Image (cartoon, rainbow, N blue to C red; front, side):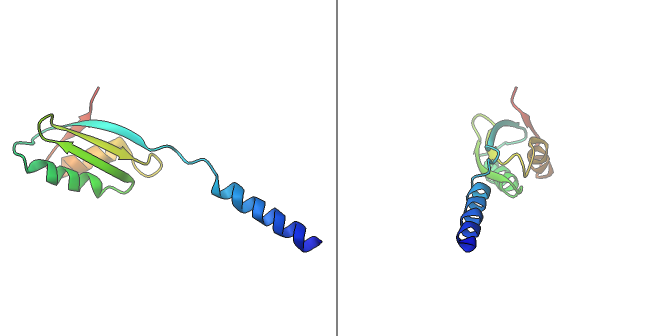
Length: 95
């Protein structure tokens, strides 16, 4: 009987831990400077997706923007903007 109770308690603990609420991913739109040709978005996307915590990035040459989805517990908008800036494409959040 003790083993059964212990097994049920352990199973309940594992279920509770596996369903712990995680932060929802955040999406930000960045205005990206210095994109002068249709190949620039490739470099910008590479810089952004190398940031740990970035889940997805869509870079658009025509609008000079990057829409980035990321995990807030792993990175920040400032870190993503720093990555584009370090690649030669300064960016800032669209207001």
